[in-house]
Amino acid sequence: MAATKDIPSSILIIGSGVFGLSTAHALAQRDAFKSSKITLLERLDFPAPDAASIDTSRIIRPDYADGAYAALMAEAHPHWRGEFGAEGRYTESGLCLTQDTNADGGDDDAHLYLVRALENVKTRLGLKVGRRENGGQVEPMETPEDVGRVTSCMGGECGKRGYVNWTSGWADAEAGMCHMRKLVEILGRVEFKTAEVAKLNYGKDRVESVELVGGEKLTADLVVLATGAWTPKLVDLRGIASATGQVLAYIDITQEEQDRLGSNPVVLCETNGMFIIPPRNRELKVARHGYGYANLTRIPHPERQGEMITVSLPRTKQDDPKMNISFEGDKACREYLAKSIPDLATRPWTHTRICWYTDTPTGDWLISYHPTYSNLFVTTGGSGHAYKFLPVVGERIVDIMSGNEKDDLGAELTKKWKWPEQRKKVDHVWTDDWRGGVKGMYLDEEMAKGQKEMAKSRL
Ligand SMILES: Cc1cc2nc3c(=O)[nH]c(=O)nc-3n(C[C@H](O)[C@H](O)[C@H](O)COP(=O)(O)OP(=O)(O)OC[C@H]3O[C@@H](n4cnc5c(N)ncnc54)[C@H](O)[C@@H]3O)c2cc1C
Image (cartoon, rainbow, N blue to C red; front, side, top):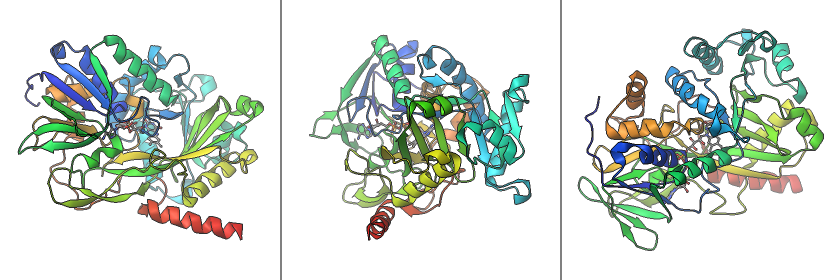
């Protein structure tokens, strides 16, 4: 166990996504921090529309191949089922995890993930196996007919086998974040400021000041970087974590379609990473949990003057309001929609979005003091799966910050999330965590290909 840390008199959290806001919530409730001045800085008015934490929906599931995340979800789930998830913020629709190969197709990575996830929810969480009508909570699906039975209202093919977990579901992501913000406001301990951090001014072994766009400098005993996919601009994370762009597409549906599809489970195909969240308010979302796009960008080294480095950073509709998904991403979403819900195959997207993960090599988060700068704590690396922990992750973050692991799970998580002893010798991290899509796509190249393809289709 790490040594208990001194309590800082001032804490400056930068970034109001899942990690930043939940940290503020936990700090504001702890007696140990009752004399600390807590400030939360966010570059856009909350909720920042291009933050990873802000969207119509996020999957809430304990279905993890890694038992530690399944166990952490067992802590978060009661909150989603209680007041935190009330008023439509959480819907326990079930989650149908499928794969596109059948039993004689071999045991690929998608299959192994499913087998391990099913094992964890059975043994670590004690979920009951069996048909739902007989009181079962998880139902293995051995054949395409089994998958078809669970997803019949979609009318298409959603996979060859897998399992459905009826205790999983999805959250209205933006509503969940707004609720968390309200809980923090009620505590009256956190000062919120809208301002963009331009850079951290680094001394030999500490952050001397936080410089805002416009030049104002702020100082704090402890600086907490929770800036999601933008973090590599403020601290050197080469070989540790990188921004990767993920595709999302939305369509409007009719009330009849809403009634038919609205209580469907979330469907997620482990083979290609594609998923469909059940519609709400006549809007349906198709997306991919993929390796994503790298957006390589030359920037001044965040820690060393006079040096330039190349890192992947987000590009969003804040930078280019006309930015949509690439041709490749559009095609992947369209094909998956056509296959799963043939009725909707040609329905135009109302809007699309590239949303940015902060990927690490293993998919484990980065929650740790910086090894060089003693007053810098970094909490990022969500790797496309942190939202579901919103109600509880702040507690675990503050445990690590304080050097107090309250249980064995805490010790396991601290180890998983610690600053790595060695960086990968690469500018951009392509995760080895389970993903769909192709590894090695670059945003500019894919966007340019899209323009060529669209020009061809107009000829
Ligand atoms: C498309 C997509 C689908 C996902 N699906 C799921 C899912 O189904 N289930 C699940 O559990 N998780 C999912 N996730 C993952 C989850 O949403 C993220 O892991 C989580 O939201 C990351 O939170 P964060 O705080 O790191 O980042 P963010 O939410 O991006 O927050 C970072 C904040 O920092 C601010 N900021 C950045 N730079 C600065 C600066 N210089 N100055 C001031 N403020 C700054 C930003 O404006 C932003 O608000 C998904 C993510 C994406 C992108």
